[in-house]
Image (cartoon, rainbow, N blue to C red):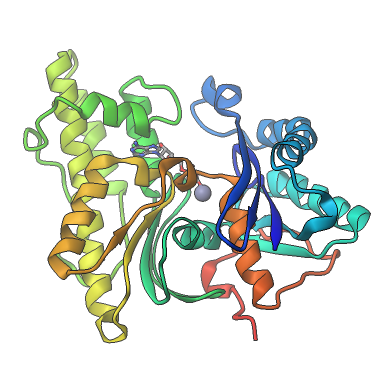
Length: 341
Ligand code: KG4
Ligand code: ZN
């Protein structure tokens, strides 16, 4: 079984073909980072236009690279939300046209489910498992109980984890998206040098809140007008450590909340999963709980087509088929996914 996946929810145009043996036959991502860099964040109109320019040649290149004849595709999977409305419309319209032209079923995929199921493409992970999706738009702590079946234990009450990385990076003068640059700067820094707050740490529940941390970072930044390279590294290391500590505290509460269902793994996904300090902190906690820790390779943690192809394949195997009339849903939440019967 082969599935073509198309992803256009934010600022990456991506497509991939995967099969039911978990093989990725082709996987191409066209980043728009340069198009948005001057604005310090994603500009929705520019994103939609860029998807429109890139999508046809990109899908063409995936088909050639695989190479899988279109007649062998079992389905076309496409991100239908959450994300930027204009961007979603481009991907979904394109996928619908292909489904019609090739007479193949269409599967609408929830982008967050794509992140949540990637671990099952890259590793042998059985349900139920705990997954933290930490990206530029989301910080969601969930129990993945099955395909289309998620218990959302917590989400961000304000900024997402990646968003706060990006905003603080921008303040420090790194270009968008700044998480990677901030981590690189933190490499030789002292994570204990500055005592940043750990919002909600030690409190019950699994929600996140990063606004207070962001404000503390801004306030400290103003007090340190001429940062030496070492102070800058210490600042970044301390900031990153605060986020890592918050993530572990949320994982602790999540594990307590679902202890009775014995999760098979702790999974980390989304662009922030690239951060080694955060990975290590959660991995250490997983080890202390005697639970395997799973992180897909970085290129499959950030937005990509393989995660959408795989989630579509899992949904398709469960009987999911969508008609060609449905619109995207920019606010589609994991909790609103229907469990396939
Ligand atoms: O999952 P993703 O590619 O796109 C969204 O769905 O948002 O995540 C992008 C986010 C950005 O906020 C970026 O700064 C963050 O992931 N990110 C990182 C690192 N690499 C990417 N954050 C912290 N450390 C990193 N190494
Ligand atoms: Zn994402």
